[in-house]
Image (tube, rainbow, N blue to C red):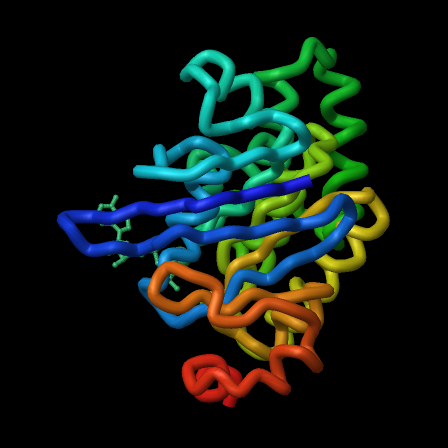
Length: 238
Ligand SMILES: Nc1ncnc2c1ncn2[C@@H]1O[C@H](COP(=O)(O)OP(=O)(O)OP(=O)(O)O)[C@@H](O)[C@H]1O
Ligand SMILES: [Mg+2]
């Protein structure tokens, strides 16, 4: 479903991604792990064409993202749900308006249909009743859940979540991790999350990849990663 080959990206001569290969099967949940600054967000941004790679190919659901022109990219992005690292909710819109935004922008749905769909989405993320609140009135965990509902609004089969647990306490982190897993499975999504939270990564994901110096230092299910003898992976998992 997601296929990355030879992905490279450098900033000011500093290599962030260095020939990265990555495969995620349909319906699979993969965690991309690594310390701060290892290029996790850069990878996600390139997957949806918000940042062009220096080299390499990205294919998602049969679409070669790296070949798309700007107009085709806009269309392609509707097929991918994206949860931004900082939630990126619109402060001046209520939760309901935020979640309904992709539907108003990209579908011909009528207001009553949008309202119905938004209610359904809010229920899915356990936010029924909070639709009238503004993002500033929400806790960090609720903001993440509202952003998740918005990411799922168009029924995308590919879901990318950048640091879904960052800034949350252990309980909320666990809750959102389990919620992402539950919804991915229920909706049949192929999901990629980035995180440096090892424990929650395996609550959500089937497999994890540890990034180091622009490449995969290890990739596999928890037992495989735990058995890695790569010093970087061992230290990171500690
Ligand atoms: N637009 C940009 N211009 C220049 N450098 C950038 C840009 N975006 C990212 N970088 C650099 O690329 C590196 C990787 O950044 P990235 O945001 O992907 O890290 P990350 O793994 O997501 O970290 P974190 O865990 O803190 O979110 C960093 O050194 C960052 O400074
Ligand atoms: Mg990041």
